[in-house]
Structures are given as C-alpha cells and as structure tokens.
Image (cartoon, rainbow, N blue to C red; front, side, top):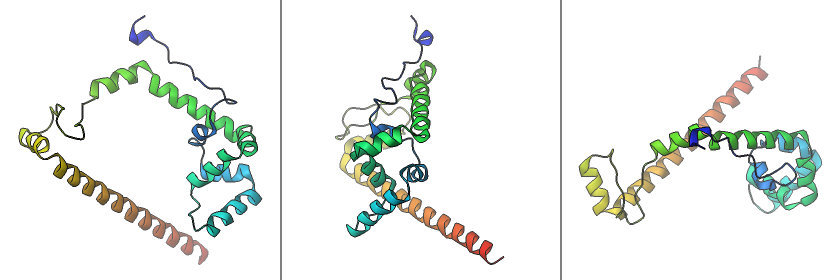
Length: 174
C-alpha cells in the first residue's frame, strides 16, 4: 500500500481509557470550572491561595487528574466527550498522509547542542560558519531573543487586558 493510500490511524484510546492529562489538554478552563461546580472550584482556589501558588489552568487540570472520582466524572460529561472528539480530530489531522508528507518535505535538520553536525541550506554561509565556530555564543544569543519574545508577549497580554478592562468600565458608565 502506498503512503498516499494509507488511512489515518485510529486512536489508540477510547474515552474511557485515555489518560485524563491528555484529555484535559483539549478542555478550556471555564468549561472545566463549570463541570466541577462552584464549590469544588472555590475550595481548590482557596487551597492554592493559602499555599501561595497561582491557580492556573495547569494547576486545576492537575488537581482533577489526581482525583480519580472527579476525573471520571468530568470524563463522563459532555465536556469529556467534546474534548475526546477534539483529540481524535487532532490525531486525524497530524496522521493524515498528506500532512505527514508535507512536514517531511519542509523538515530541516537543526544544530545539535555542540553545533557540529547539521546542514543549514537556507542560512548565509557566514552565519552558518559563525554558528558552527561559536555554538555557546549563538546559544546565548538565542536565549536572549527568546527572553525578549516572552517579555513582548507578556506586555501584549497586559495591554490587551487593560484595553478589555477599559471597555468593561465604559460599558458600566453608559
């Protein structure tokens, strides 16, 4: 059978057997909050505050995953079924032979940590040579750029939140 003729592989999991952590990746915090109920949510939020930890989506999903009864309850709700459907759709997309072939076509080998074995065909020759000769400096440079990107993302989030807050306040005063 040719690669193009292969069917997408079926999910290795069923709704009852998929690990909750994997299933939770396809759930939104608000939906999970609603499925748990206000009492459970408020209790966990208070526990996180008492411990001095932020009550993030990751924290919430971890709490549910660590409680077998709650994870089974959420798995049995409409939220669990929708999350499993999203998981299957994503699996189908990433295992689709056309997408696999496309990703292989665009895949490029990247430098190893030492920068010794790689082929960067799209980089100017001088940059390629610099990276090969100065891997630590290049790695430091990339770390600085990543930190700048994280800072800019944070600034963007804060500006967006401030804008939304202003919009909400404007609605209140109308």
